[in-house]
Amino acid sequence: MNIEFDNAYYIKLGEKGSWENELLTSKNAKIGWDHISLDLILSDDWKSIQRLIAQNYSEGKKKSGATQDFNALKNFCKASDRDVFITFHYSKLYWCFLSPEIKSDGNSKYRSTINGWSSKDVDGNDLFTCNLTGNITKIQGFRGTLCKVEDKEALYKILNNQKPPFLEKIQNSKDQLCENIEAAFTELNPYDCENLSDLIFRQSGWQRLSNLGKQMKDFDMELWHPLTNVRMQVQVKAKADRKVFERYASDFKKNQGAGLNKFCFMVYVPDKTLKDSFDIQDNVRLMLPKEIAELIVDLGLVEWVKNKLKK
Image 1: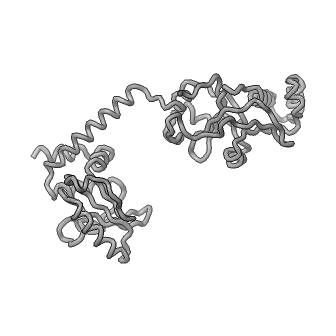
Image 2: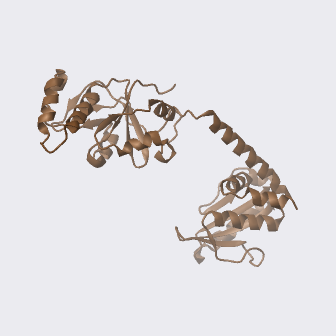
Image 3: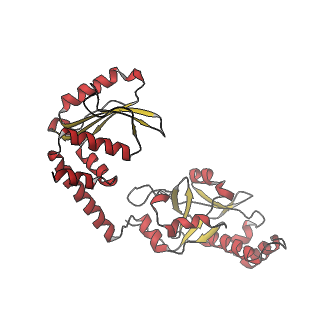
């Protein structure tokens, strides 16, 4: 079922997010205004509330600030259980629906959430802000406490994981390209595979410390990543089975005390024994054709593969 709502509001949980950890854990939403009594809110005396908020503003503050505060408090208190509230915390969007009852802890007014705060869409995907449209993420820059979300349609699509039709076409095209790249691996010789693997790692930020290829007995490349200070040995095989992989993985385990952090075994055309899933020891990575093909596409190495196939 889709996540349906009437109105949408952005709420800032405390000054500079100071209440975020507390409220996201306690499943509440809270707003300030300690000088406004709960009785006035429950009696729906918004004229008196508006007057008190205006009086609370000093002469140096703009009248619009009092209006903004009044609207924030009123919208928070009068929102129905079909209105969705959103906030942002540690690079994620959180959303909730609020129960009708308004309470006070002496300093603030708060409402309990109906099912807690969620940072996932209807399909269980994390709502990372880096993956959201700017029409929604820009709300984080709002300086007040609460405001309406103007682009409700964009928020609806985000919460219900609705992608535009062209996005599905792009993904289908990428999947087809990856399949074609993977099929081309049968035409690459061992030296092509070594050179292509070197390009994949270099495009990913790794620096090669060793020579490339057959000069070394137990591996084809030794790499170092400057950001993580991790050293990794890589063995590249045009074709291999499970026995070959396990032998190299075992040798790495024996020599791990020599300052090596990780071992990666790349195989472009594995036999069926290596395609089957099985447990792999820590710090050992097995890269099979599907992952390699996706990296080739993502890292812009398609033309390199095409040029090799022209020969």
